[in-house]
Length: 439
Ligand SMILES: [Zn+2]
Image 1 (spheres, rainbow, N blue to C red):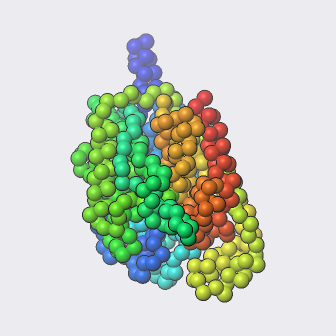
Image 2: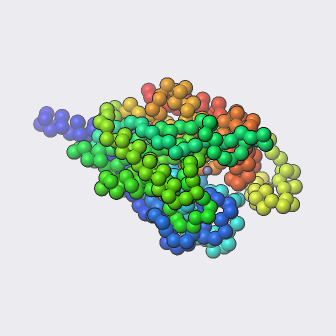
């Protein structure tokens, strides 16, 4: 009896993991996300798009589910809908769910992400709304499947390296230009969670990288997951039965280099898959102890804006300025406008490993600063998580200007760029949240 009790207790305290994936490729032509200049819907599929989930449970009521997805980004409304269903159906608290996007620019529009950037016909608008509705139900089911698949597991955390990410904020006499800047900061680390079953067979691998998933540029019309899609497909080919999950890190001001060809996307995908393979081929220390998680919405201040600016914008020759003005004036009429941005942050302690998730297109300095200032050299940061509503620049970048700190806020339909203070607010709040999960 004692033996049975002891064995039951051991099993109950053992870490478990479960992975699942689902094909989310739209059935017909659909408007593609990310590049404003596209003139027609998609034409066929190069490689299928997926949503994938990895559930990890510490056997002591600590649990987390990571969802990674071959899409441009989860809008807040979509993420909230999934999170509410996950709470109701699977008792997953908000802090126990991560919704990360690969930020592929060769996938469909996820409505209403970047809604003011596209000028869709009724038919194209309907198609992206139908895709989004289906995505929501697929991801809710997927989360349940990953939990249903939980079984005893050994999980290790290690960091690899890939070198194709390059800074894209090039200083010129006319200001910052969106162009390769080899001297600028980068983060070439590839944080990797290796998940093995009780027999040490690879069950899943979750890896991240700080680089825009934009090797394929706007002239490509075949749906695909870009370099991250190729990396995941290669890993699943070379490890039959395992599920490979890619999460975007602080990629805001990082582009793949070189880019603009299918061959480049395949090469970058291969380099990333090789980096993951090299990392998981080493035997590491199994994660043990507790899983703790916290989620918080914080307020980031916008720069000053007023109704008059948008009323005069309505007569602009720039269609994006007009589109943003209409959007903001409507929000002002509905009294749904705020002078601060509601911004999601999350901290997860997975035994000895620490994970931070951040909303939006976070620039690379956040990954570098957080690792250094939290004294966590192996911190796994997942940006593009739980809402992708704008870029998240540093205070220095706000002063410098350029796409990430100023121009992009127009395409995101935001009333104004963020103030430089946003950086310290985020860093301070994330540090505090990390302290709470480390206790
Ligand atoms: Zn982007």
